Length: 229
Image 1 (cartoon, one colour):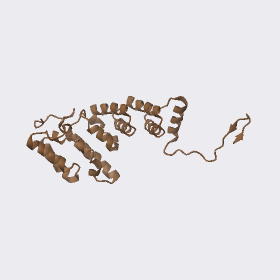
Image 2 (tube, rainbow, N blue to C red; image 1 turned 45 degrees about the horizontal axis):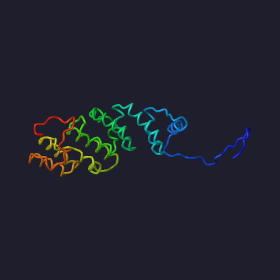
Image 3 (tube, rainbow, N blue to C red; image 1 turned 120 degrees about the vertical axis):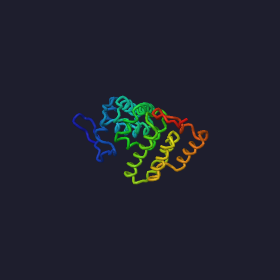
Image 4 (spheres, one colour; image 1 turned 30 degrees about the vertical axis):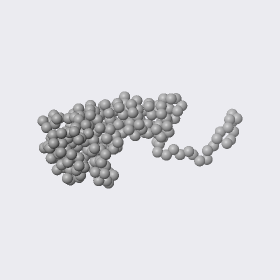
């Protein structure tokens, strides 16, 4: 410590404080919030600022980031928004994003960021009755997601999707479609054999009494099939 010309004491730190995993731009946003209770956000920095706000328990800043993400939601940002809402337990944001993706499912699932969804976020989407997409298309999307992530993580697809595939509603498929799904499944074992077997039992017995109601409930985008009851 030394005294300057005005008689004020200044502390000299020989060892700088290191904040890992935070960029200078993000750190400046945190400082801005701490000093002004406001923060300059944009599409480029909001995810990083939100992550840092969560790390340092800045709840109000997390809320501000969540509101910004919700207000700027688009086809290209929806998957990333769902991801962070799940990661940081932002329930209001998750509900807003889920409602958006339900309506625009086919467009959202075509974006590159779809492949970056974590397992938990993907499960939230697949659990929805209001997804505007057909089950056959969802099965193809699960396989696409699993294939991409299997290559990146060097893991078998069935290891990546054991929780995800539980949300697929095979009982909504026609026998002809189920036969195709079963044939495709022999190549990668994406779907547990028991799930396919249960779907065949459903068609054979003409009854869903032994199946959970969710697996036979149509989604908003489920196409009409003559065999579906």
